[in-house]
Length: 135
Ligand code: SF4
Ligand code: SF4
Image (tube, rainbow, N blue to C red):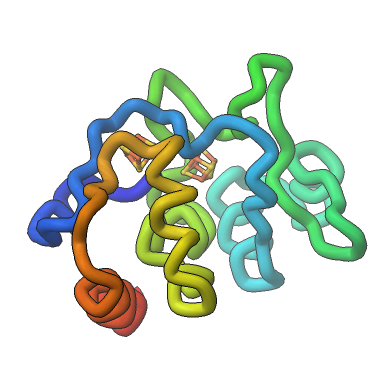
């Protein structure tokens, strides 16, 4: 989940710290840099990180889920790897796919109580672009 402080200023979104975005198979992908950073943080080799904490979506490693349906790093509605979490988690909900299809904002808001509905597409796009420029 994102840091409440970093994006609270956006009137479109205020994180409620409910942890719901860390639940379900969301395909949180990890690139080579992220794999290296998270492995180093955990103190394990990248190969072991992939083996123990990832599953594959095609050829792309994505974070695995625990038996409870939450990301393997979800802990008490927080993130066990907060300081090195993947970009996708850092950016949420201001992610690139909103710019591809603005309807994704509404779809995502179904599972994220922190996202505000009713703003214009232009406002949403502007906020996404601004947030992405800083991540
Ligand atoms: S689902 Fe939304 S409100 Fe809940 S923790 Fe995730 S980002 Fe925050
Ligand atoms: S890495 Fe952290 S923020 Fe990202 S889905 Fe997993 S628990 Fe949530």
